[in-house]
Length: 204
Image 1 (cartoon, rainbow, N blue to C red):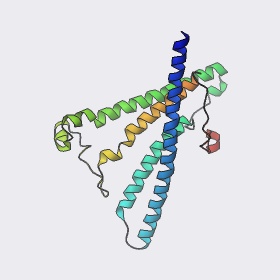
Image 2 (tube, one colour):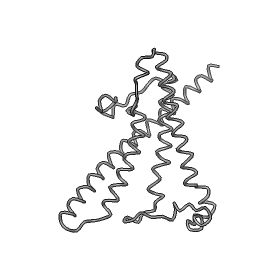
Image 3 (tube, rainbow, N blue to C red):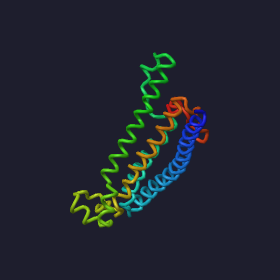
Image 4 (cartoon, rainbow, N blue to C red):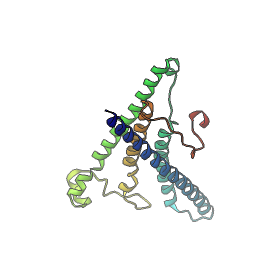
């Protein structure tokens, strides 16, 4: 019995370790994308002021913001900086509040898993492999044109841009599971000192 408890404790600790590793990667990605976005905006200003605008910069900036939004939302979930309505939980007892918090984390986990399932159906990796990565043949049979479409000015494959959706679904599920593990008391709650903002009140 004790060995099983230790094994469960080790598994939950590894889940938190994996979540922390992903969180560190997200922090670096956020910094890099913020720098890239600033560079793109400055490039846009300079080229428009000089009379030779680069139209692909606008599209690149939009995609950069999209990736920033999804990666930031995933990181905020782990840092517990996501929005919460505490009108009810503030009036509950300590035990009931813990149950409510764990239920909320479980709901986020279910959302992440549902998004992951929808991405699997939408991107259909098994289907595109079955057609030997022939995007046109796959689109003709399935009417899924994801792998044949390209962006307007950058001419990038659309599926590459939309990879952020399954990535976000996976990282959101991992972070939500880690939060649930902490809420259930299976592991002590961890702090992330590398992030200067560690509570929702500090954002405001």
